[in-house]
Length: 286
Image (cartoon, rainbow, N blue to C red):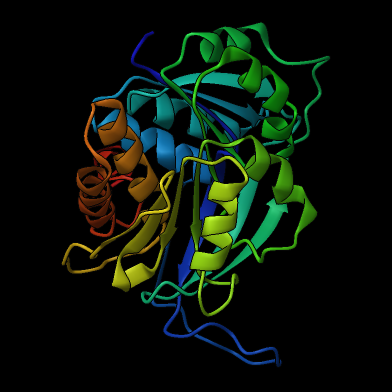
């Protein structure tokens, strides 16, 4: 087994607008604290974090033959990510309204579509000999689930702010060995849902809690907790992806779960100090 990680899912070009508060749903004028453009997408964030940790990573994403797609390709490649780009017609673009505390409204300006006749052979090959497969929420990844299962490699997924009911998430939850999420919409206590996932066949479920750290349930139903690493926060975008990448990298290196969770917390803290998905983009984008 090789040591690389295969990731499938979104990579985008984002325009970030920082506000002191999210807009109220009434007509008004509001001044931005700042704005910038950068690489976005949950899968791009995980890929950048793993590459920054020294882990080989192959990212399969849909990109268009447009200016934004060229920017994403160039920056990810320069940051050490092996990109397996599929034709997407147009590159995904977001306008993200953000607060420094982590509030966000994401406006999707464009979304790609899979114009191929099936899975790219290069993507299938990269999955087959991967140490782990990460399938992020996207139609592209949904279509890869049977192939990922057939490899016998461990499957990791990130269901983000799952509410416990949305149908699109279910195939990812059912296929995954390790499930990551946040507690934004699951209810006051995420542990009952997390334990049901273990009963359903997952071996690890992790729920991030922002400034309160994260909790986890392992295959023995043992509960774990980790505190957030103290850091002066510049921007919260990508912290959850960095946390998962840190846990995955440490797990593949043989660390037990408590140490892997601590590695995730440390890596998430490093991303909070940059306004990009990873500090490696600072030198590339300024």
